Amino acid sequence: MDGTYNLHYTHWGGCNLRLKHRVTEATPFSGDTPSQWAREVHRALTTGSNPASVRDSYHIDGSCPTDVEPIPRETGVTLAKALSGQLDNLHHETFYVVDRAFDVTAYRTLWFGLQYDSETVERQPTVGFGAVRTVRWYDGAPVGDGRARGEFAGTNRDVSELPDGGVFDVEDATEFWYEQEQATTDADREVLFGTID
Image 1 (cartoon, rainbow, N blue to C red):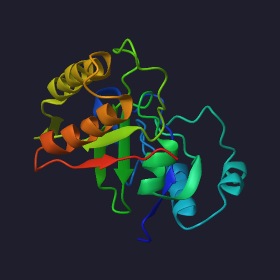
Image 2: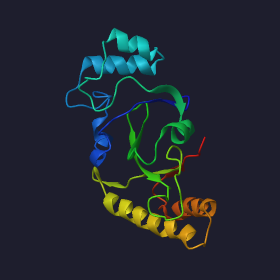
Image 3: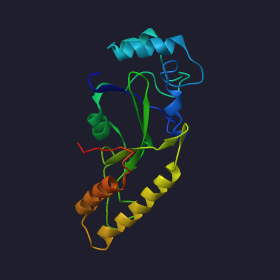
């Protein structure tokens, strides 16, 4: 309601975009079986209870039978802060936004780093350095996700050659990446950009 979120981590939640349909009111942290404790923990966390107190009250440790860690890594996070200060665009392959009605939006993460395909670009940041883009769905299944990811990887290789060939410096190549992503994202999908803190 206030434009902030609790930021949770999931280790395998990006696999096949499975959390899109597994995070529900009955399973707020995903998992195979609905449970009263998960609903109570979720309710407590979304009504402002201290995460450490919730963890201690429910004896939550690393062995929870859920796909999403119940205790948030941070609370009261804006979407802009999550994208710029928390999301690692290289290592986190999926980013989910869940509203209070459990409407789940799945985004693929896009890292604008050129260092692995370029001979001249050195180490680049991973947190906040890129974008997230929604996935197209049809009849409950992602459509064209693999193709879109392949196209992104191919464009990354092409953009990586620009600094190598002296066409752009690294900053101009990065700016080109941002412009390219805006221009190639279909009108029915959303792209959000991080910024480097």
